[in-house]
Amino acid sequence: MVDRRGGVPEYLDVPEPEVNDGEVLLTVAAVAVENVDRAIVAGTHYTAAGFQEVLPAVPCFDGIGRLPDGTVVGFGGLRPPRGALAERVAVPAAHTVPIPDGVEPPVAAALSSAISAMCMQTAGGLSAGETVLVQGATGVAGRLAVQVARLLGAKRVVATGRDQAALEEVVALGADAVIDTTVDDERLVRAFREHAGDGYDVVVDYLWGRPAEMLTRALVPDSFAMPKSTRLVQIGESAGPDLRLAADALRTSGLEVYGAARNAVAMPAAHQQVVEWVRSGALTIPVTTMPLSRIAQAWTRTDLRGRRLVIVKG
Ligand SMILES: NC(=O)c1ccc[n+]([C@@H]2O[C@H](COP(=O)([O-])OP(=O)(O)OC[C@H]3O[C@@H](n4cnc5c(N)ncnc54)[C@H](OP(=O)(O)O)[C@@H]3O)[C@@H](O)[C@H]2O)c1
Image 1: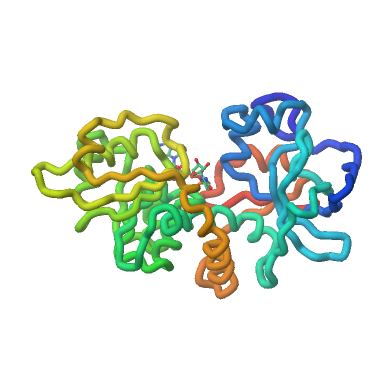
Image 2: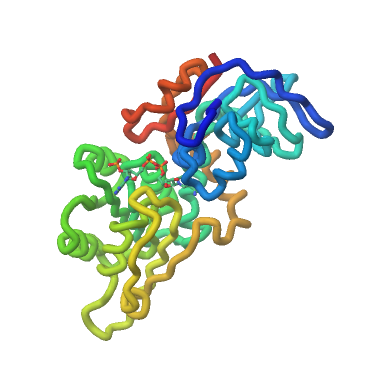
């Protein structure tokens, strides 16, 4: 639990949760720690006030648990200040979903990053044979997005990052070309152009900030030719919450900007598709597990290199 904004969660005894009408008591099996959880605890996420209105509070808002009969379910719908990083949780029965056989709880806990990468299809309208640019491809979600793009039949996948060794790992995962975002603005704009082939059809943007701004500049044509459309799907802001969008970068570039939540009605089918890939082994979701009793050490780890931290019982 955390006792202040920006604190590191500590492993402490708290009373058993009360189970209200319509709720079920679950034994927690696995909880993924994502950037959004860290941002809520840090108080920088737009939902932080709701989750931390009362302190101390238990972090994380969803996870995988076992019903008293042993059935494994995904859960959400927690009542703050109680969060998912606990041994037991009480949640509304309506906020539980069965976890399919063949998906272990730690992987099930981390599925959402792969599912959210499906926004390239649900929000971005990706069709097989198109070109995808993944901004922030060295992170957990970005590496999965590169693989998802391949599985969805992308003709060409271009990936950005800021660490050469990590970018080489992303090539091994299926990227055709990589771009180092740490170069100066002019070189970065040039690199986006050089690697565009016949144009980026869909951009999955985990970064925003400077890399996204340089991309918008790179998309401006140098003639009056009709631009090809580029559907940018905004899903993360690891490089910053803002960018400067020049008028001509919108007027002349064919740029279309969508949020990842666009066309959310298509997400259940996307979810099912990801589960099938995971079960068949077509998609691997790398996780590093640590026991709940070591949450303070787990929370501060920075060495996971593309693996999702998942907290398990113990
Ligand atoms: N909306 C959703 O459903 C959803 C789902 C998943 C993720 N996200 C969001 O997407 C973003 C990435 O998530 P993640 O789980 O993949 O995080 P992650 O594993 O921490 O990866 C972050 C990525 O951003 C890069 N990065 C970090 N700071 C940067 C900077 N200042 N300039 C340029 N690049 C920078 C990292 O590069 P290095 O590898 O060099 O550190 C890495 O590629 C987060 O904002 C997260 O909240 C949203």
